[in-house]
Image (cartoon, rainbow, N blue to C red; front, side, top):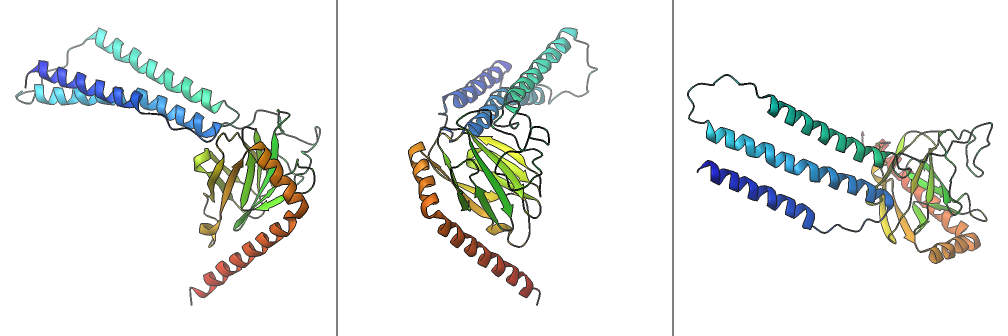
Length: 287
């Protein structure tokens, strides 16, 4: 194989790789969080694949070109080549840094930028614990606030800005196309709120709030689970996130206010029974 054929094969490989990347259809993302993360991954992929193909192509060419060389010759200085790859590396690092910073600076990824409530400004009304360190108040007038309380081995969701007490267990209901602020806290030890399809993940600490912001754009049901090992019932600490249209969300709130308390109580009793069963099996297992 001649050097011309090698260069031609390398050029074809690069072209096919780039065509595959840019022609592949982008799947619709169900939330702003997941869209930001996916777009960043794609941008980094577009930069990484050509570099990988180029480096591997040079490596293959070098192995083929010098496979019959008897002795290694001293490297000759090539200042132009050194300047070229130094500048190229700087450009790549600058691109990666800017792309990542833009995503991390977003309130949906890096966390809300509003000041946390404190003793001087006052706590967010409706939160369970007085210690609201890390709980960020919404900056939007139409935002929804929900307290997420993690306890082994279930989730409790308190809709703190709803008219009347609304609470649900293991099923988080949020409206479509509205900013949602989730104030996470744990009632015992460390847990982790993770909804991969929506691009959400945040640890829940005892008596300490951490706020996560999202905006779901696709109605549907999404898996929720605890991503931090928290005991014998860890595998059962799952839930569902239901994204509803604004009208359906309002209807759901009204239904919960009128008769949802019984459903919540039943859900809590069911979770308690499951937890007791898990603890019982954990005790019996060693015997």
